[in-house]
Length: 206
Image (cartoon, rainbow, N blue to C red; front, side):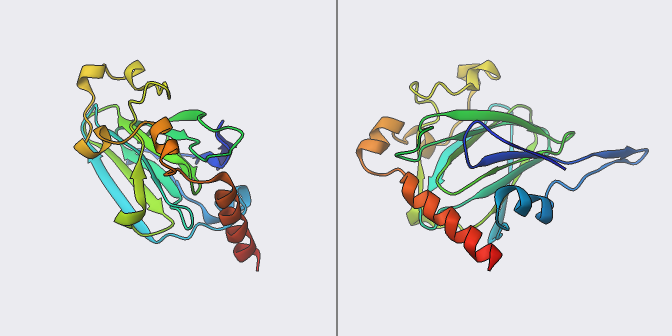
């Protein structure tokens, strides 16, 4: 399995070998040993989520309070999606930077984003199935969002789907801009995120 850090520190793309045969194909999109060797600590999975989306569905931009935060390992088992990670950690040298990766049911690659990063994805075809391995369980009081259409972020949605074909939830449409979320003190602090990751590394090597 290949692992490559994205332009946003704390996020990686993992690409497994895919073995096709007359029946179809086989791959192991998550491999604990490779993951821990890359990230520096094991992935504790508290919850697995699956979504099925039609083309044009845009989910995000979501994040959770840190600590504890919610890290995600995101894989597309059918269809195709554009997965986007945004650095929303206040005080981070790369604050506001984003990176995008195509995940699909042929490459069976995956994106990992550590605690404090913002996450969104766009379904590129009907019947796109995304699975998220989450480090913490869903906690409504700790879950937040930034509007994925915030023009200041310049996220590449309309390079793939026309603006009038994007489908968002009412909650995501009503989410604040990045600037408004920062002004409200609602964004994760970079120092708290570093401390959380350091604690996970220490626990994983104890």
